[in-house]
Image 1 (tube, rainbow, N blue to C red):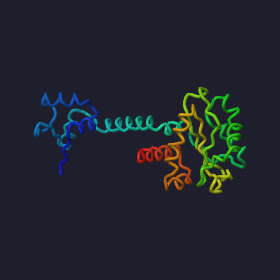
Image 2: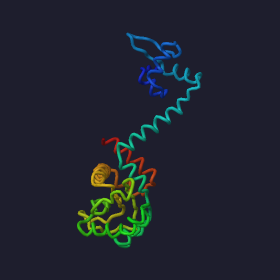
Image 3: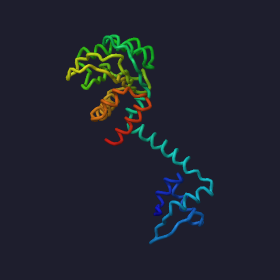
Image 4: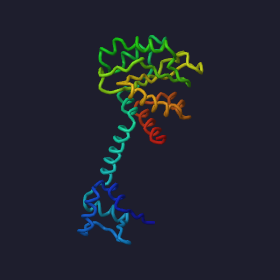
Amino acid sequence: MSKWLIVSDVVQLLHVPEATIYRWIRQGDIPCVVRRGKYYFNQSTLVSWAKTKHIHLEEHSRRLRKNKAQVLDSQFPLIEAIQAGKAYHSVPSASIEILFQAIASQLDLPHTITDSLSDKLLQREKLTSTGIGNGIAIPHSKTPVGNQITQSLVGTFFLEKPLDFKAPDGLPVFVVFALISLDSFHHLQLLSQLARILSQSDINDFLRNEPTLENLVEHFKKTLAQTA
């Protein structure tokens, strides 16, 4: 059965301004029918017409998906922070001190931060555990680093072996999300979005498979979009 589209659908399909669609209609240059003052387009006919006009629908679809992805990234700063922080596997974890030293050395940060980061993470950990349960921890310093960086980042570290963080549930940690924030606002924003993801029932199994950064970002984007 043929699918009928309205003007807004055609705008999305062809990725052209609505004004262009109406200009084509006035010029009789695009196949459509008028019903009760509204314009309708047969999808299969429109696709064939687009090919004759050398309008590449797949190219437009890719561009549209890219634009939507950019909008999603800006809506959820955690995605940008995860991408900036990257993902690391088989991270040395014989002790919390060794783990925090590895985190400081592997994150792409200015030396002014790297040199003291492991100590700051350890100082914060001594106040209370950053282990949140289910084998996950979110280490961070007591205060944001401010203008020493241009954007917040979250590094994902899969530990070489589980490490006791004295988490509330007593389970050893196998993955940490090291949070380096610009300021308190971004810190709370990133924590909130992380909490939404880490509260999902399937997240533990997903993380235990030690996904790549690409798969991690894809999964996080999907989860944030579904829980928005």
